[in-house]
Length: 383
Image 1 (tube, helix red, strand yellow):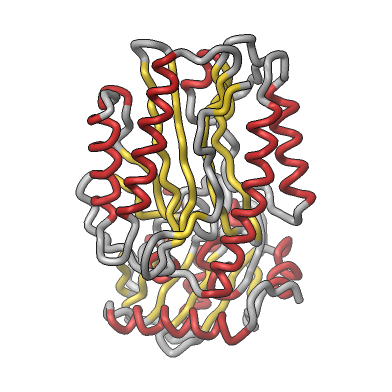
Image 2 (cartoon, rainbow, N blue to C red):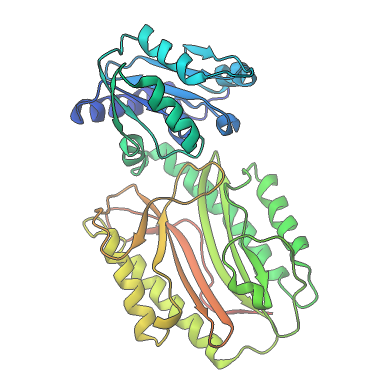
C-alpha cells in the first residue's frame, strides 16, 4: 500500500470533517475534489477527470464510487475499505448508481452536502447529480467543508511542503543560471523538470508560464517557446511539488545591460515582498497582505502595473492548477493562522514600457515571523 501518511493522521482528518458536518447541520458530504479524497484517505489518481465520488457521513462511514480503471489504484493508495465501481457504457448514469449507494447508506431524507467546487464535477455532471438526488434527500453546497480544514497543515504535511521548497530552489537555480542570451526556453524548461523529477518530485499541477521579450508579459502558460535575446527579459513562474504538496516561485531574469527602471521595478518588488511577509502573521487577515502589496508598489510608483490579487494558499493540488483558496485580494476577511501556507507574488506588467518584473516566494505561517520554504533572489539576476 502506497500511503504517504499514517492511518492515525487520516483518522484525525476524517474526524475533523465529521465535526464540521455536525456543526453545519449536515448528515454527510459528497466529495468530488481529488484534493479532498487524497487528504482524507490517501487516494491518488488522475481519474477525477471522469465521474467519481466519495461519501463521508457524520458517523464516519465512508465509500468511494469510481470506475474500473481505478479499482486497484484506489485500494493500493488509500485506506478506503468500501470501493464500488460504476460501469461504463452508452447511456450510463453514474449519478443513479450514486443515489442507490446513498440509499444503502440510509441517506434518504437526510441533509447531504455536495462539494460542487471541483474540477471533476462539471456543470453537466453536477446537474446530473442534482437531478438524481431530487426528492431523495436535501442537498446544499458544502464546497468549503474540507477546504477550510486543509488550510492549516499538520507537522507531517509541513514536512512535505518544506521538501517541495527544497526541490523548487533547485529548479530556481537552473532558471537563474541558464537564462542567458541564445538559450532556448524549451531546454531550460526541460532541465528544470529533470531536476525536480530526479529529486522524486511530482509534475506540478499547473503548466509553467515562461517567456522572453514581449512574451515575458504573459503570466499564463502559452504554447511556443522563445530563444533569449542579448538584451532581454525572461519571466519564470513555476513550482516544486512533493507528494502533491506545492511551493511556487516567481522571478524575472534580465540579460545584457539592465535599464534603470528595471532595477527600480525589482527593488519595488523585493521591498514589497518583504512587507507582505511581515503581514503574514497570526491574527492578521488575508486582506492585510494585499494592502501591503498595493501600498508598497503604489508608493514605489508602479501602481498602474499591479494586479488585483497577489497570491493564494498552497497545499495539495492536482491539475489543472496549483492555486488554492483563499486568494489574496482586497479586504479578504480570512484570518491568518499558524500552519497555513501562502504563495505571495509581486508582479508588475507595464504596458507603457513593455517591461515586466516579478518576485514571489512560498511561506509557512508560524507563531512569529513567517518561514520561507523557497528563496527568491535578493538582487536582480542579470546574465
